[in-house]
Amino acid sequence: MLAFYDHQESEFYGLCVAELLTRRPAMRHVHEFGAGSGRAMVSAIQRIDFQGRMSGYELDERSAASARELIHRSGLSGRYDVRHGDFFAALRPGEKLRCVVANPPYLPHPRERPAFPHLSGGHSGAGISKRILSSGFDTVLLMISSYADPCSVLAHARACGYTLTSWMVLPLRMGEFSRRPHVRRRIDAMSRAGTAFVAGERYLLAGGVWDRTGSGDQSAVLSRVMSRFGAAGRRPVS
Image (cartoon, rainbow, N blue to C red; front, top):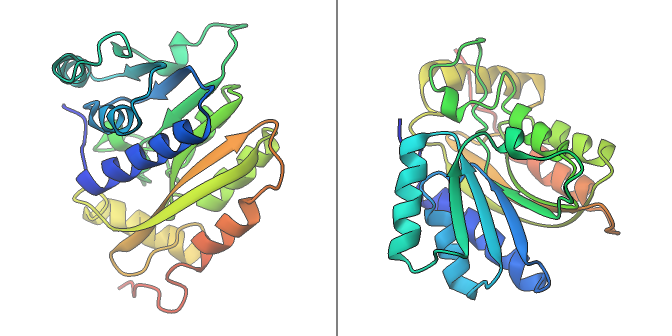
């Protein structure tokens, strides 16, 4: 199956990456988890004319091939490469890991074998996000969803020794897959439990930057923004 693509989400992800690289001009090599179609990163690189090297990893072979074709057409060969393979398996022990960017799958699923494994973030939707944060990078740019246990992701980042140094947030309408009945039922159950935060069919997507050497942690602020979203009127559940 080709990688899922949502225009608004992808554009916002690309904007967050471009903002990070603009603020960190010394950043010369960036890893990317889940390149997908490559469109978000191509847009980011072109937006700021990033001259460093971007190394993307994509599990779906056809998506990786599609991304490489787009990179070639965009004239970015040598600056952005996408490999077909497992991002986590590609990390070498002892390697100096400077920066990773990711818009990981974050659909929460009620069962062990989800219908859309390429979009699943596990039972709470936060599993892959936490695994990325546990991978040992100096800087992490990660997209997190208000319906995928965001407060636990923020707490996990702090436990891993990170400081949330900057963030941006965008309200989005739930897409085709998050509106599927079994996924929506799981989100509603998490909302009742206080681990998912939605307003009708809308949720918040945040792009956060975590640093190991940063100061002025903003985790508590983002946690409040996420957890208060939709608080005035939770979606009724029959």
